[in-house]
Image 1 (cartoon, helix red, strand yellow):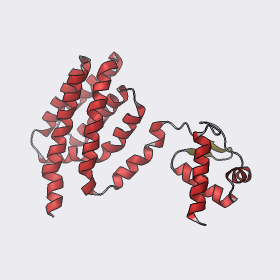
Image 2 (tube, one colour):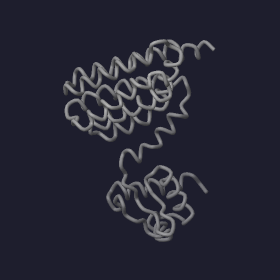
Image 3 (cartoon, one colour):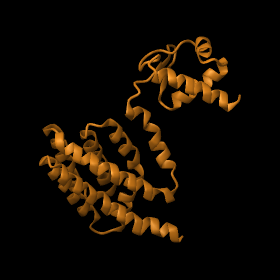
Image 4 (cartoon, rainbow, N blue to C red):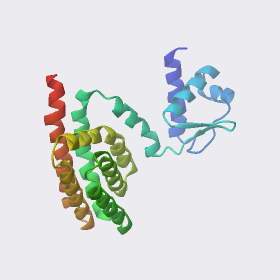
Length: 233
């Protein structure tokens, strides 16, 4: 089956969704009707649907039919996390740059409107980080949760999803640093405390600066100790 035909069917189906003919939650016509709608064969329509299912645009419900998903950013951007995990090591400095651009901005935005309930959650996570400073795996787990909650508090689900998708690779550097550098855990906890303090003060500038310091410290360590070593080898 020629790939261009499938690509055309995917594009046509995408246009129907973007144009509102197929809204989130709506059910697709039966395969024969869909093929006629797309101007292609049933097998081509089937492949187009399969591709959009993998992209989380469509959802096949066994025995019920195929539906357009909610199209929420956190759903559609799931594939980015998979792509990030497949990135070659020489692309990781760029990943750090993207995180440096997005996360301080998200942290500053969170400081403007974060509620007391979320601040209480972050305070508890920080206490858990202090208690498990000697357990690197657990510390990284709480670290990831802390950042995820801050990103969610920015009120932009697309940014939160993008940052979450990048966390797996950059947090590995956090783990390497904790294993190889004395005092890294204490420094990490302190930096998170500074971020929390800025959020509690609802000070966007302070929150932005605290996030830049935190990310920049890990970024610089990665560049000097992991990426440089791999370049040499």
